Image (cartoon, rainbow, N blue to C red; front, side, top):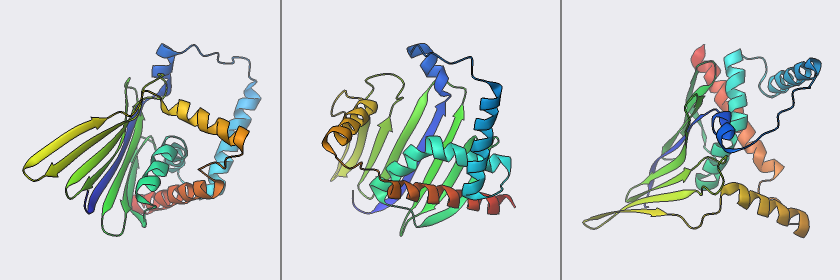
Length: 217
């Protein structure tokens, strides 16, 4: 690829139930006491407060979005490019349901953009732009079985501009996860994502929220 000039993480999806309700039969409990639901909500608010302090409701919502949907994206970004040096800027809107952050690396920037709306689609990818090539890892919805992750490659070689799509197999990511988890249980394989590694995501989430606070003040 040559030198990396820019990277982009994009994850704009519709609510999960829009896809799940068409593709799966889900039994949802209807007899949970209201007091238990209230306790769950209160515990969630307290955990967010313990992590990032007392912040506006929209910032708390943005943090919970990062801990849910964003945890996959940021972890994959760190796997590919390493941990960002810092967060240059961040903004949220729609009550914390949409978020954009500008992440700093040593000699390039990466944008992170995420949000959840009412459209029946799943648009998630990571794209890395180099001097002579770009790579795009395209994820499909995990709620429809056997939709694999696909790699798009664009490359300049001499006078030629080449575009390719690579699909190594038809195994979906959840199947990979279950097989790996089975090996961890039956063979004693240490989980690739350790608690220490996940802390790096949480620290980056908290930094994004701190920058959000500075930009909104």
